[in-house]
Amino acid sequence: MLPYRDSRLIRIALILFFVLLVGYAIYEAQGLLYGPMINVPEETITVHDPYTLIKGRAARITELQLNGKTIPVTENGEFEEPYLLAEGSNHLILDARDARGRTARKVLDIVYEPK
Image (cartoon, rainbow, N blue to C red):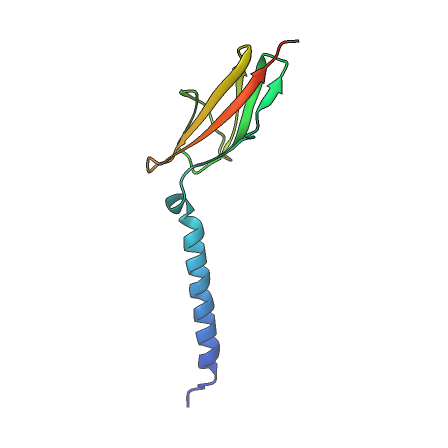
């Protein structure tokens, strides 16, 4: 005789397995569902040194550019790029592109006032 009482336990285990499977599939599909992302401070910054370091983090990208120049990104998505500022207001544009051709753009405004 087959123990029919255990079928409830098997059913719960299968439901839990498929819920975990769908959750993992959604987690892995983030690169397909969401486009590239750039995290940098967005407020206007006033500095007194002409050399500054533009740094932040980018996710789900294949290429990152600062004012049209490709900049290197680590495996974790972090980037640091030195930049020489002109006197006055500087408008810097970060463009990111992913493998599907989707883009993201962040604009940095840095004001350089010499001492």
